[in-house]
Amino acid sequence: MSKQDYMNTSVQEPPLDYSFKSISVIQDLISEEPRTGLRPLKHSKSGKSLTQSLWLNNNVLSDLRDFNPVVSQLLEHPENLAWIDLSFNDLTSIDPVLTTFFNLSVLYLHGNSIQRLGEVNKLAVLPRLRSLTLHGNPIEEERGYRMNPLSPQTILQSLHSEEIAAIQGSRGEGDCACESSHRQYVLCSLPRITTFDFSGVTKTDRTTAEVWKRMNIKPRKTHIKENAL
Picture: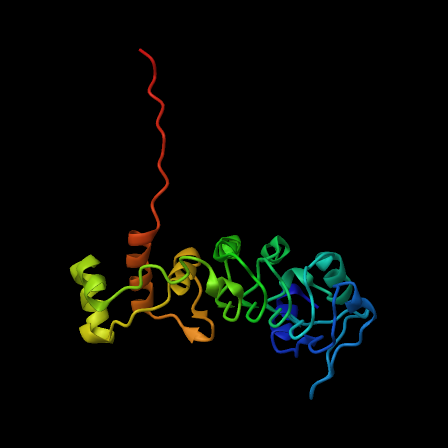
């Protein structure tokens, strides 16, 4: 089977589903039997699964130690993972191992114990990430999580004329609702995503996030050394 044929086939495959298994360490996946769905999983000649989706939701994982070697034992082409569901676990951070899957397009992390909103920055290296969830994490209580909510007047005062036209064309001036700062932060950090917390990202969302960025994130200062004469 060619690589392109594999990609075409695995996109249609059901997920490798280990949800609701009370799994506490990644190594347990080796001995645990995945859930069976209406359609059986296809396997390669080596016995590994031919799928691009891995569901580990509703377990008790606190870290992703040994994630790469274990996934390599389960999947024929782990590098092509496109969907990872880690929702409703006990993860306190976004493990860097997730940033090694460059074909990842869907990542569910809601209902965990992620403490810092800045963890999102790690995901900026994923070129195909389009859908992300983070709701139900302690970051909702982080200081500054909802800092500087944007009123309709603030948004319009901060925009260029073409940006105002774009917003008024889609919502109207009076409908530019304030949104939580964590959404603005995520959209600024991950400009390629199209869905966040199961809500579609619109052109207006992008514009509002850009205004929020101007107001809340100071650009890094570049120090230029002067050559001695």
